[in-house]
Amino acid sequence: MVLDKATRKIKKTSPTSNSIVNSLNQKDGKIWVASYSEGLFELDEDLNILKHFHENGQGPLKLVNNSVRSVTIDSSGLVWIGTFLGLHIYNPSENTLIHHYPEKDNLKGLSHQSIWEIVEDHQKSVWIATYYGGVNYTDKSQSLFKSYLDKSTANSEVGKFVLGEILEDEDQNLWIATEGNGLKFYDKKKDQLINYDWFNHPEFNGKNIKSLWLEKSGTLYIGTHEGDYSS
Image (cartoon, rainbow, N blue to C red; front, side, top):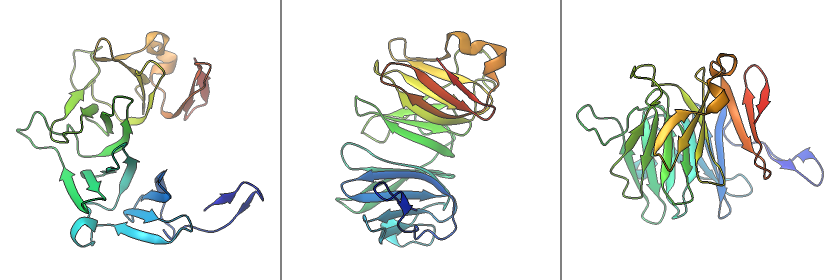
């Protein structure tokens, strides 16, 4: 649905029927809608469907899975599509779609197939939060991925966690929400993913974090399943 700010009324419903919308992105007059079970839609500003990416699509419109968790358009115009079964990258100028997925013997591939969040940082590199494989990093070569787990634990299984939203701060460090494993912090200078200061406290570390928002003053707001925090 679209809210008209002037009238404060809903103008029109989305063409994605009753599917849950997981993610929205807008660039160059196009709206990208990632749905829970109907794939990915590219819409114009009047919500007319321009393209529909889904399991039964043909050619570059064919996705490996209809559950699209995240969609991001990077600075070069590439569309990064995170699904339940891997990562697609769509090139609008060439009308091509490629698929990345974990490979057992490929240590430089994706660490997990289920993609939850995709963010491009200030250096134009892309960070990918997975369900249970830590954070993946890639440059625009799109062929090599680096995986980050929680280095605060020696147990590799504990170091894996369900990830959610990724937020980049003014120092170009990353804050990463998890489900049940607190708030993670990627220190760019140390090139390390860690728990941050007081977030190791047991009253906070087990929280299911749903959202992050950074105020211009530097205050970080943390929305959890149990309530809100700020730092």
